Image (cartoon, rainbow, N blue to C red; front, side, top):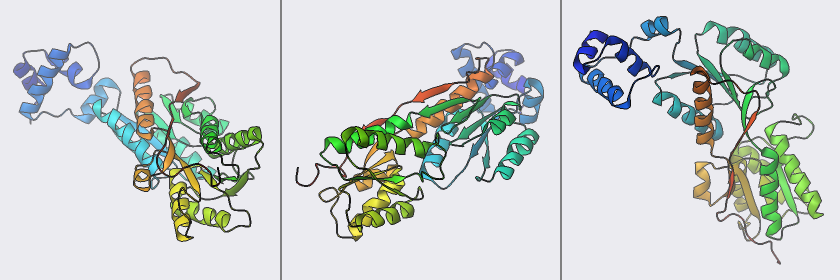
Length: 333
């Protein structure tokens, strides 16, 4: 096997410089780093993970904890995390957890401690104070994306503003009979992402003097379809629907079509996410740049590993209205 000394000879530098250049730690000029990497590539040299961990005290692995793996938002955020980590030579150790508190405690208090990782990213987990304390007790950088996460550095979209923006778009088109598909007001935490979007909807409708309609549904295409069908077959069907996710909104578009309704001529539909599928449905949405969220979280963890001070506050992530063809002026306007 090729050793580090052979790479050093080929690149014309010391073994210490090779180590710094390939680990990404320590001062090395860009030209020297490129020369070392070229020498390593030519010789087929690969850094030994166990040796690197012994030398640096790092495993070059980041734990990522998610509640779902089969939904577009989570898989896209994961792709962004992977993009940023791979650029720096880090791996992902993935943990999928349910809403069951005992299982989550086992992951936080046992699995994460046993697996050697350098940092943790959580994606849209609603953590209570005890769970946040368990994560902080690991003594490694922790960054959360979305969700109420007391005590942790949290990167989040302003979901209250997202709900208001989507609703205001429909109101500006002249709609007054607007329904929201999303959170169940009786079971969702007040500070959860779905509840904040619902609250933004309610506040805009109240400000406009319009009576809001609500129905809860799973954040899936099937869930959105079932909820929209209930609304559109009701006695006073809405002329517009704001769905709390793009998958739900796509389900609503499909339900409207199955009922013989035209989108947007008979009913306007808007979602949230920026889901790639939305383009094929001409879906108007609030894009929250999910892949970029993952990159930002990974960069924040790596910055702490490089010595940056952790910040226990909420950092705001960007979002924007993306108008396509699923919303239009209200009928009769």
